[in-house]
Image 1 (tube, rainbow, N blue to C red):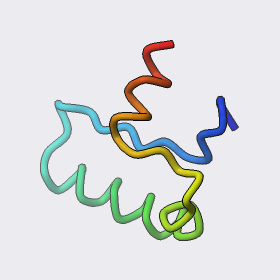
Image 2 (image 1 turned 90 degrees about the horizontal axis):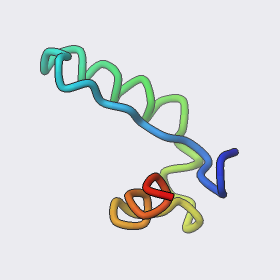
Image 3 (image 1 turned 135 degrees about the vertical axis):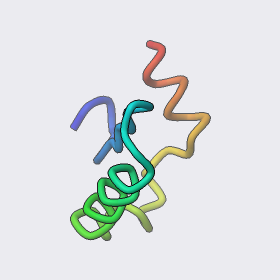
Image 4 (image 1 turned 180 degrees about the horizontal axis):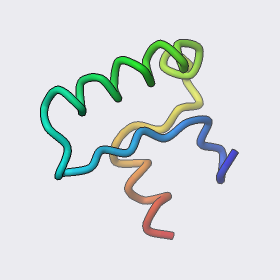
Length: 52
């Protein structure tokens, strides 16, 4: 786990919409417990962590 982040979803701008949707659905299926966890940072908190 990197600085308290349990899972990270990486999107590639070169991916098609179908590839992005597939990646997201795979991630959701594999990380159901992390999605509802209050310890998961929101988008703004993630940006701050990744800039460090």
